[in-house]
Amino acid sequence: MDVDRWSVRFDEVMARVAGRFFRVEPRSTAREFVSGLLSSVERKNCWWLAEQAGHHRPDAMQRLLRSARWDEDGVRDDIRDLAVEHLGDPGGVLVVDETGFLKKGMHSAGVQRQYSGTGGRIENCQVGVFLAYASRHGRALIDRRLYLPEHGWCDDPGRREAAGIPPEAVFATKPRLAADMLAAALDAGVPARWVTGDEVYGQDPRLRGELEDRGVGYVLAVACSTRVRINGGRTPVRADKAAAALPASAWHTHSAGDGAKGPRRYRWAWIALDGDGHRRQLLIRSNRTTGEMAFYRCFTPEPVPLPALVRVAGIRWSIEELFQAAKGCVGLDHYQVRNHRSWNRHITLTMLALAILAVAAAEQPDDPGSGRIRLTVNEIRRLVGALLLTPATTATLVLAWSDWRRQHQARARKAHYQARLST
Image (cartoon, rainbow, N blue to C red; front, side, top):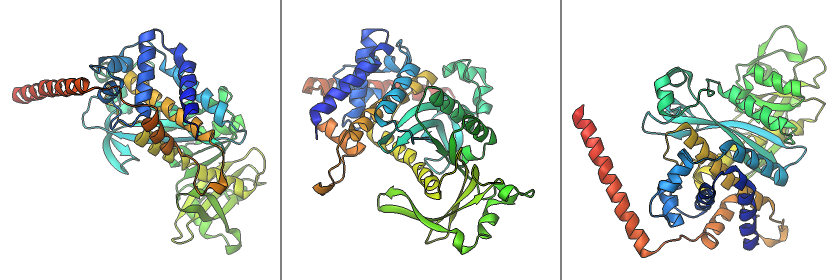
């Protein structure tokens, strides 16, 4: 465990993105912001991060997210390059997925009642579509897009202006947002042999076609009702009907990767979807206990064995683990902003903090005889917060912040009461 090396790595990463900030003040504030995200502070919003940094007000942190001059998309590109430099592998996998950010009001950019995978139901939320990079060295989030619903947002100039949504941000489906991020990553030379994602993306033929044109393999989940042509047949059949017709000899047991409780072992089968079966397949996963099935459309530029597709299908879960780490460790969903740019900036800085942890985790040597697992992203964040990032605070500062919070809450209460009385 080289704690000093973690401090050096943090300085190197912040120096790497320093040129994206056009003035010294936002550059310094961004360093304090990311330090706060990596600290043990309870909430990772501007108020808490400002107090952690020793500021007397949250103004500098709020200005960093809303109006300071810096290039958040450039920082995002630096995160992608950092991930490739330390985690890159020719067999890498790009993973697309979305996550929800539950909200109470109606003024945050893109918020409305819509399905959230976070809650597993329709919620009042924002939805972000993300791209992750995963390899045998580790994993990191490398791109993000805020999903803007067509009705109620993209077609409402008043709401767009109030939320600071730029004119170039037009309506795009989640698969279109994913396709844009995949194209940017592949054009930038990210070493990825595969793409994987859930049904939202597997059901989109345009996305699949673009990946095939690039010669990039994919293992994308699809619904059981998906109709496929078996062995180039003329009559399409439902995926679940095709699976039910398979003989017992078609099923093989493989692990889709290690989980918290050991290898995730399932029964797997595959069916050729074209004449030679070397390029497009239907991959089927069956739970060995319940028999519940999942289905994947696959494309391989060259023939691969079944375990290779199983491995990619299992890697799809890595982005869920990244969301959990990002929300639990570095405050991906702790923001209190409404503006479109502010959302992108907060998310980008949390992705940067998560990438720093991912690089630190990848650099840990294996020690199989130690009787303990390798340091995880969560554990490194805990150690960094405890050993390197102590709060810059005094009793006077703590009392000043208590006074400021109560003043702000009094003003907010008065404004709410006046608004309620006026209606």
